Image (cartoon, rainbow, N blue to C red; front, side, top):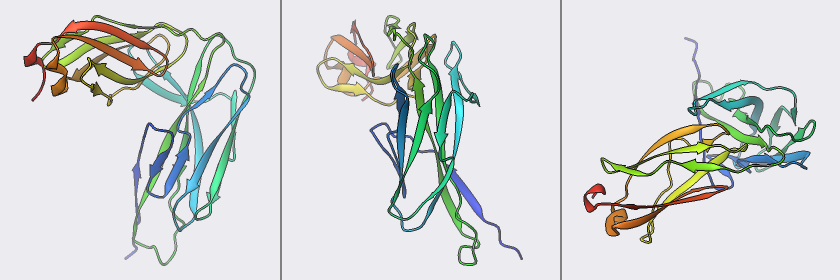
Length: 242
């Protein structure tokens, strides 16, 4: 009977500087081209004891007005190489990215997918299950000039949650970092949706941490990588989960 190999594909997304997933490391995990930037680089590291095979794929990344995402074939205004490569054990490979043309008033966003390829088939690994990793590095071609403008609706408390909407009325993407609640150190740092492209308006419903109800009159800070928005609200004790 012929043995069949199964490959499991996992997507790992971390938010602090580098991605580590088993034997596979990527740094940095986000690229920004400023108005004067012509080139950038990403380093792929093989932390393991076997060769690492990689194939790259670039996708244009857009969001509609409600934040729904789509990925389409990328135009050739962004070049990258090498497109396929093998990293020996305990070695690194640098991916070079180049921008064609100059910055304009319209931001462009992409994801460069770094796709680990299954090991080459051999008699020794017949029938084995291999875990392979695919990671999409966000790439932004920032506009010129940059106009940073994020707006928040009035925050409401409903069913032990914070409810609000964020609207990006500027011309550059913003990434939600955290929601800081009062002076107690209560914060929210996990979100279903992190990025808001220009023109996007998105609703958030976030569970209140228990310590958030230690103050009645409370300042809420909504922080992104580019802005901090502040509102003061009353949080009743009953609004927090125990």
